[in-house]
Length: 111
Image (tube, rainbow, N blue to C red; front, side, top):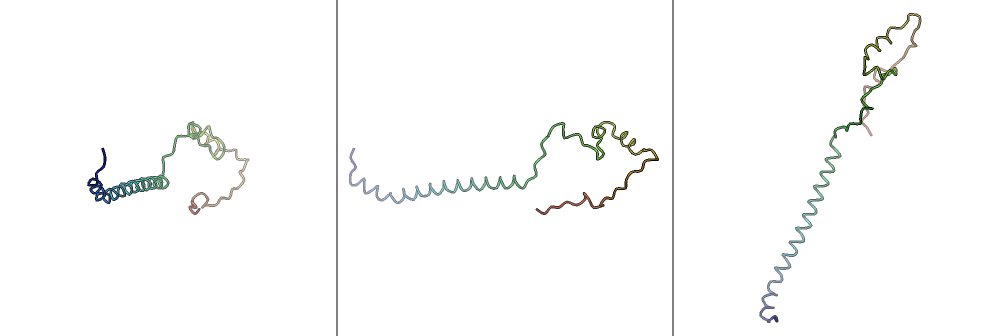
């Protein structure tokens, strides 16, 4: 089937519309990709700024040790262990500890 000159005339008048349609399709794809990247970037920034729940570390982290080292007494009957430590013989004196009252109460948030 051959193309007649009249057909070419009709096709040439429609070429500008075809070109515009192709340009619109390309721009639409580029805009869609740009929107996708922007959404991904927003999600990443939101994840960075949000505070996540702590994950369970296991049973090892549940036991908290005392300052004096009686870690196993903290979970089971810790009150008895503390009473025994406070009741010392009168002959022995503890060395005097000097502590800063602000120690452990301030948080440094600067980098």
